[in-house]
Length: 68
Image (cartoon, rainbow, N blue to C red):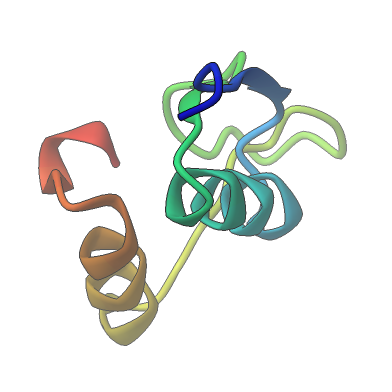
């Protein structure tokens, strides 16, 4: 078996989390970096505000809801 891939995703947007999910499913070790802990209302680095259903969906992807 080949070497396991590793990736760092910069940005916890929907695109960043989707990319992380795809890489995890492909067997890679992934770290997602996001500069903001909570939505701040600014146009950049505003974080990601999701409705409860979206949070459940992403929690299922990640396997560890504490990462959200």
